[in-house]
Length: 162
Image (cartoon, rainbow, N blue to C red; front, top):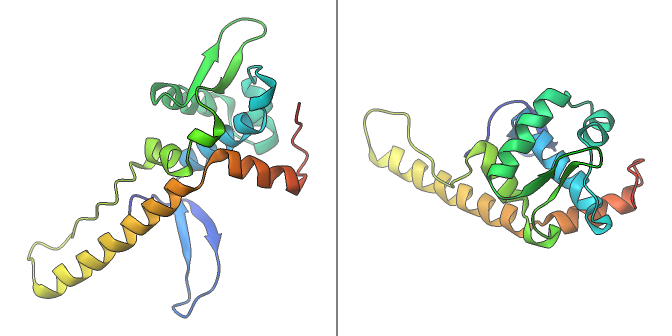
């Protein structure tokens, strides 16, 4: 479903015993970075890498690579120099969780069968999995970083806001 393995981002027991989405570390770090930038968006000032990396325990070198990919996707922009750093290239209301996740995990809503023989059973399963993937894409496209930043403000996790 376009998700990679790392740790469960959300986990609750279900009737089947598991109910969670698995995302890559790169995607999680990218979402944390964009959320940090969204939370500081109104200041108009670039945010330094260490201000994002240190509170979340993200290796700075890894974060630089992630931010460069986000820049290539047109989601963030950078400023060089002593007062430099990164900021969002668009308003937080215009950036969705699905867009950021798609940069790293290629969320396309497409699932392919790994079986060599297409049978009625594999087609039925594949159709169902594709419908679930499409719903996942739809839901991720509805969640903006403005909404997430607003929720974060209510959490008071020590993030500094200007």
